[in-house]
Length: 249
Image (tube, rainbow, N blue to C red; front, side, top):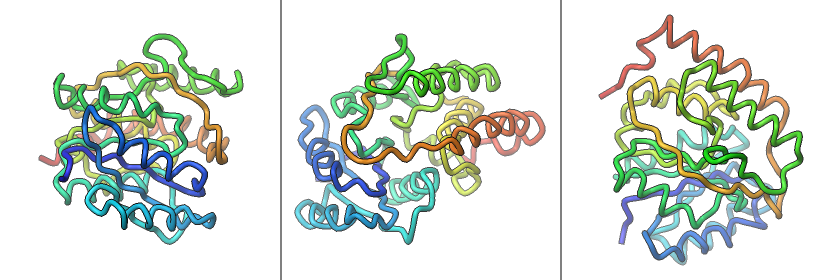
């Protein structure tokens, strides 16, 4: 039976995690979640692992394979469009490496489906700093990056760079997905800021973020650079190109 909620998981070289992640999400009993993996032609065989799970669970597990490493933002845009085409009411972004707590999926979905939020953010900083096993320098960089984004954009969101997010269908329909600019770290900021400017209700659900145990992080200094200057660009566009932030519907 098809769920009303799709979890999108982008992958690049996640063979150590992806099978366990899919089985863990499928085992959740509070709510049924379907899964869409967007694989960027992982040379380690991640796509083939998911193929086998699609064969076992064709109604709940799906995969889109792309030709190469095209960026986090474009992976999610591809997933968003697929979710809308297939009639999902709620769409969740989630990493493959268990840094996002699977036991919070139900709470994140319920914040939209039950409590009336349009966007629910799994927040590392809603109740302090809830990050485990990150180097202190990375914690400080992430925390102050979110503070910087709040200052520039005016959003009342403490974890503006979070990648564990549930969107109500209406938000994704209202945003011109083909006009989303950023591909990396700044993509998460752009999506939240656009929803904020369009007047959608954003709430934060506190989570504990645990650094990956298996596999290799995809974070780089260039991603932070994109976010640093991208935020200023977004703010200027909100002043001088307000049409970009008008709802499509």
